[in-house]
Length: 141
Image 1 (tube, rainbow, N blue to C red):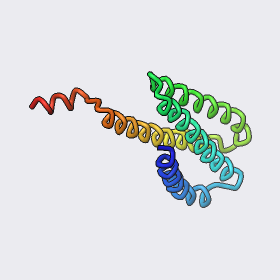
Image 2: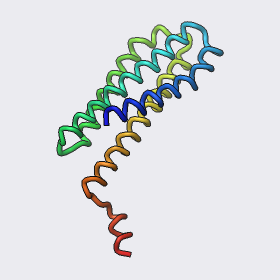
Image 3: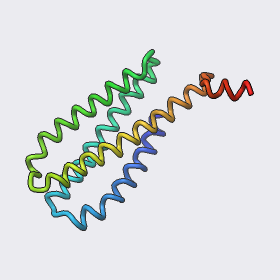
């Protein structure tokens, strides 16, 4: 799972980087470019760490994986807020663009994390033989 995640994550992050590279370099001044790329980098690292935390709880077969997911998201959110409060005074003249990039990267990387984990958990449930009500209803028909 870790190697699959790393492969998909690097591909996803590379695509996001390439998509955001042109507008940032074309329309932003150097100081803001650095800030936006730091936003990208901080969320790249935070999502990687939080996903590995959730993976650890899945691997250890903890009873409630949901708690591991919530703890990982809380740690990610707390570190992101700390980063934002430390860095935002340096970008007070371009605070709107900096904040927009901060939240866009947070949202995009978090969506990837959740979609990857949900897909992985669904595969695990199918392997373990768990069924859903929808599966039971279709089997009865």
